[in-house]
Length: 131
Image 1 (cartoon, rainbow, N blue to C red):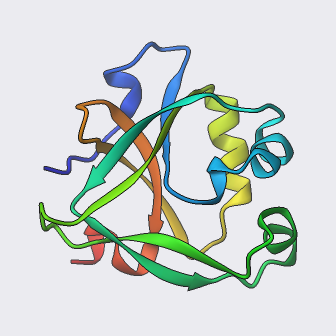
Image 2: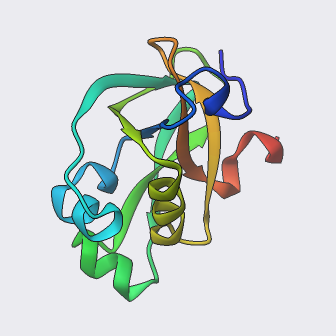
């Protein structure tokens, strides 16, 4: 089940969890965006499926090496699961990740399959508030 809110409520106040299923897993993107290489754990996001999103921002394309990124689309179906990695990051790193993401993307707090509460970037066209 997907739930929304602030992940800090369930995690240490000095760190937040960030779930990535795409380019934020790439070392080059992590270093350019967050200033360090992240170590994470495998996890999964339930109730979402992947869709393509064309990236118009030349800086983001240069960092990721991709003009099309895959984005999480909310479906609400338990059978839809996206595998990825969950990282412990600082609130400042979350703000830096927000700057990296394009306007067509929205950051939500979700409960992952492991039970961890984390931020995730999703396709704003299909976020739960649009349903």
